Image 1 (cartoon, rainbow, N blue to C red):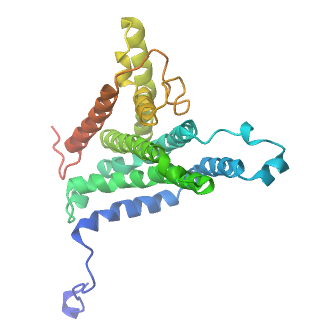
Image 2 (cartoon, rainbow, N blue to C red; image 1 turned 180 degrees about the vertical axis):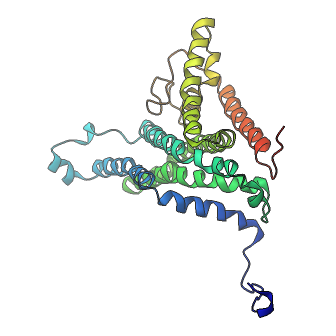
Image 3 (cartoon, rainbow, N blue to C red; image 1 turned 30 degrees about the horizontal axis):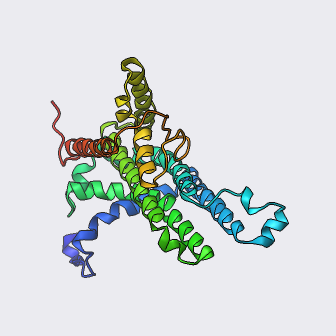
Length: 299
């Protein structure tokens, strides 16, 4: 704009609070995700599982529908801890694949195009930048896991009545905290891999490899050394053990869906599982701290 025209005026509108300015990052990231038909359809397909589970819960208390379908309530899966654990396991597998598609594109484009100095010159710190990127996954994965799970719990409590929800608050607590353990692990791991591998397809492949290759390597350690400590690098085993402990279910193969396998006689102390998951998250924070900077020094 030419200065001599003197038409420039300072912005006089309302300013957003300083604490919420980093939320512009997830807003545009979600807009970009909505432009992808595949991601949008995959995300919407993730709600079919909760709808089917809600149908099972409804059929338990609708004799007319059972007679119409010519089945009995005993033929339906019981609405108990095992039911909610299976629901959490299935939804968490969908959350894993959604993270594999969304996560690699969170940080890598900014690093590949040297955009971090532009971001960090805005009024938020690099940790707010990381939180803004992570909040995309925190929101999407919450909508797939604990949010519909608690709605199913509320539906069961409403249909049963008689204080069932109060007596089984432990199930709701296990569903909530079990979901957040998985969500935080994915939300830390995906941006860390995306920050160090700037090519999106390679970042997605590395994300898959971390889970499946590490699980195979851990199984090889167990076979060669005749021990169970190799499961410390098997993320599915760690999460399955934590879930079985939260839901107070016996450890068995397939606890929490097929992906979270726990072999008989391969139990690990629960504190080791918690410590291993916390260690992975802290290591991811370290990787992000090394990479997310306003300037890059090239030697």
